[in-house]
Image: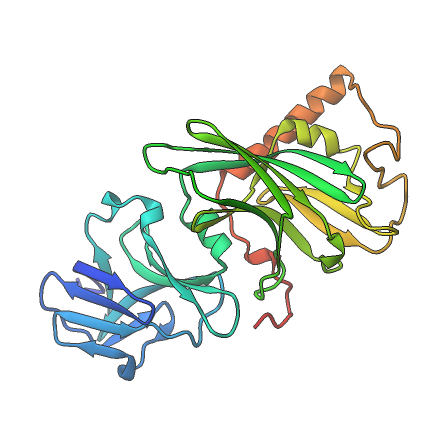
Length: 328
């Protein structure tokens, strides 16, 4: 049978901001190299039969996609594989190579779950939240409005055997619709630490800085990591959905809250409220429903469970970018 696939095993590798260096276990022959479907030009390659250096360029790559490194010799596809890759924890196998020049994306070196090497271009909060899958859980547990200020309560828990968090924590809101990152930090923060958990209460104001009709998500800067809040408590879900959908945090305007399967809560600044019946408000502006009958409670618990299961699964934020819009 004609051979169509070959595996080239890697003895060692190293990502740097400008290059990927590989030492193969044995001497190999390479005719062409690719990052997925993008051919690597000879000028970006140094190779002596066993040691390979590739200049990690930025041109021709699309955001959010993983570009795996492969080789080709004649008609044979060469898979380049790192043995014992599973010995590294997942969050140790994603290498932040720094921000690229043309936008706010970061160049990421990857050793994936199958031992393949690759590169990817994503915002840092996507890298830390979804790709690295850090051993911590972040939840939005409560929201309180006082006049035009929003007080947000976060709870975080982490695996103390893999991660220690006693660093500065800064809550923020981040725009999800553009590769040019717009980020709004909380104006005041208080933190209470436990053994392997913490509660953060943050104050947000100045909501006029939000762009109209664009999606924002709550996040936390924890030391060197940027983590999006992917989940909410049942208490918060019950408070907002389906009876309330937003707050008037800007005079004559409306901040809409939407529960999603991959981002916890999105907030979106609206200029016009189409119907007061459709958008009842919290904090006394409309009568609040304090008690639920058995059917309502059962339905709320069931719908929350569906969301909770979605939050556990990993997903991508590629769908947040506006189709047809130039995000460079």
